[in-house]
Amino acid sequence: MTKARKATTLTIITALMSTGIIVAHAAQERTTAPEIKPGKWEMTSTMTQSSTTGQTTTNLPEQVNTTTQCVKKDNAVLYPEFFLPMGCSFTGATYTDNSMNVSASCGSAGVTMTGSVSASIRDDGNTITSFTFLSGAINDNNAASMSVSSTATFKGSC
Image (cartoon, rainbow, N blue to C red; front, side, top):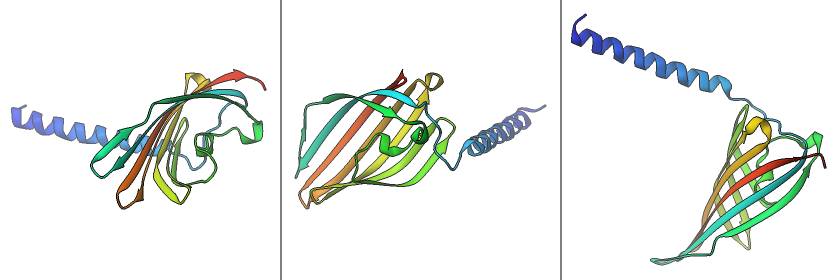
């Protein structure tokens, strides 16, 4: 086989493999949120925030918060509300057997922040990790952003 033919063959194989991976990934998507274990979950969240006025950006101190939540069997699914408070709306959710990605819009005190939430179920369903990013304009000269990294750990029954 000539070098040119080998290169063409490798290119075709690579293209077919890429297509196969994309098709396999698309087949794993689902229309409903994946299930999580019902019971007691402990979530530790680390939030960073910044505000920009004109050309000056101020980073606020990092905040770490740990909460415990009892998830009932009839609500044991990976929903975005698990990670963001009331007052947020969600669109464009995509799910796989162990993950979720969704666009978010949250309003408070007349300010709307938009962004996304992604979450993954890990460790045989005992851990959920998530990342949230939101940003928005406060007025013509001021903007704000926040990111939250969370890890939820299953602790057993409630």
